[in-house]
Length: 392
Image 1: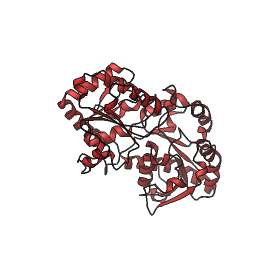
Image 2: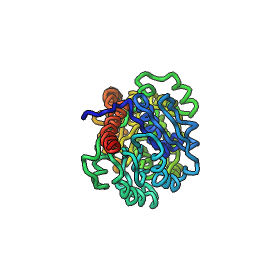
Image 3: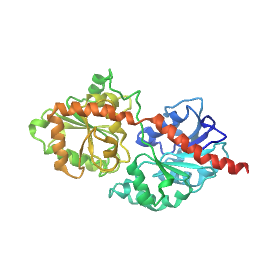
Image 4: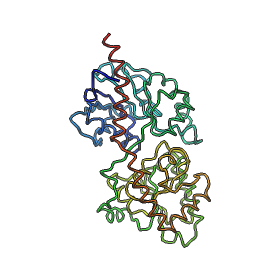
């Protein structure tokens, strides 16, 4: 399709009000997508005032709009997206709107074409993942606003399948483009700060690493601990289990279980970890394990692979899709299966070496620049007809 404008002329508005103070996968998505789009477009990014202080991207093509922290809470945040954002767009020269997480926030209408990114619909797959309010919001309110979305980008084929199934949308309205990873930070070369990071967190090797917020039941920490408890004393004698991530819904249940576990003295909760420390944690780990019950993608899986860290993960949702043949997979609801796979990776050095090499190859399939190119093309497709309509 030919057009009278090119991607250097696109003026994009991004809502960043689900930035989560930089402590979530959606925050990382917003960081990387904004930085990549700024290379060839002018971008206006709306952030809560508190998040403007920590947003890492600075670029001559980027303008940041500060929004009052009054809209930080879920209800006010939802209302801002539903009713205020459309009016804000009326008074900007932006040609299109990107909503980085329409499984969390949508606008009720829009004067400009809208590209929405959907990460997962895990509420439909994991009972009790969120409270009743958020579950009803996702299942009943969000679908009412979907007609105003011009195009949807799903971050995996599994997510696209769920969007078609649960939100009853047509295949033609949805494209798929995987997340990327920061290949300047996560790479095969071992970082020099490994000793300092391990010493800071009182970590001794060997250890297993799970990078995820502490959430129950969705992230499945308790099943993982139960699987570890099934291992022989010889296998766990010198082993540490490191959970890197802040507390979320149900964290107290996970910590209560750990306090009564025979492995309690081997399990450590680091809380939220600075991104600068994550490469050292990946490289220092014997293996990275992701036993989540459901994921739309799984960025820590790819980050671990990029650091040549052997990976184990669930065989469900998008994790199996993203892992390909580069991870040892298990049924996350079967404690015995998890335990057997853990035993294999602890015992067999050759298996760890093979997974490490396969992971380095597999991670090359995932790129933030590739994502930005995909979204740029989709924006051109949806804004060009709109420009023609405006000129008539």
